[in-house]
Length: 483
Image (cartoon, rainbow, N blue to C red):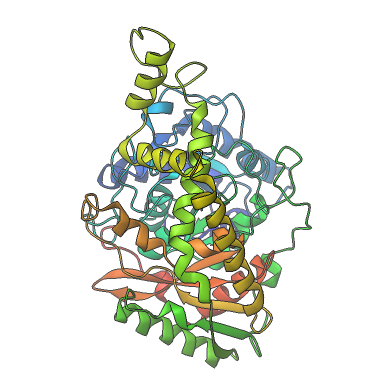
């Protein structure tokens, strides 16, 4: 049963081949057996899962149906879940139990999804390797000595290892797409505002976006259907109708205009990944797509702009964690200043502290105009580049990452080297565009992804292209040895 996709589970439950309770017990046992190798979960919610599974079976017995009714999933541990620890991968929130459900959690629960647990992540979603978690690094199931990517690495590793069919993630600068690429999954970052951020603990509020991680585009369509939609509790949520993503998967690609930016193929890209990208282009050409070279001239400024804007917003968002109201508090503070300093110094890890410091500096008097304001202007130029490109093409295609996964600890002494792994993904967050990564081959036995970008609210187009590609390739069906 653990090899079934979400779509296959939905069909199996509808045909009464198995119950949600049976499936849930199988997967919980599998997690208990295999996750010690991976460290992909922070919290398991066995009692909740079995209660939800029984309820889903009862709803089906009463004639209800739905693709997510009885389907097992997990949530990245920054989605608030009522009465369950929501740690954000940090010592700061190790003892925090959310008093309410995030909108994403509530919507998926209402659809009948079964929550197996909360997955490991980079602390406060800051990282590209899932090594900054207070609960230890997550391992890549394709090679346990390598990183799975981050910050949604726990969700990615769990799905790739067939511990469950799909999971939620969040993407601030590539944190769904990059781990999807490094673990052979399909991962989708929706348009900014498409999925509610209410109850999703913030890293950088103008960049964060929740989305699905699964093995196939078909499964991502099912999970996104349950997550997307307007939420009056979220001031950045956009009141835009949600299409039937599954219904659009089988559209023809005849005449689809694909743009391949020349800036993607620079010296920083592993030439073997470049070859796999062009192989995927040829595959899409066979399906009727038309390909042309385009230019995104301001892409070279994306990383410096992102690593000013994101830390600036993080320094503001994380100021609430002060040891006073909730979360970690230091022992025996001498006074209020000591309480603040030690609670934050002891509660936050090195990467979070580094980004808070960078952000506070960029926002400080005398530097705001020189750094933050300039970064926001570059952000507008990057968005304008995309708008110009989408006048010529329907989607943009390129590599998801410049390299395959790297060894655990290999970039710990050089944070900038890890930041550079986000070079192809962060532009979508700066512009608020939807992006998808899909499996496209292997380099040295490690998975590689190809990224698709589309205009605003065109998630359906991305899913359609990825699904058609997956009907004619088998990269997404490969399973890591031992799992």
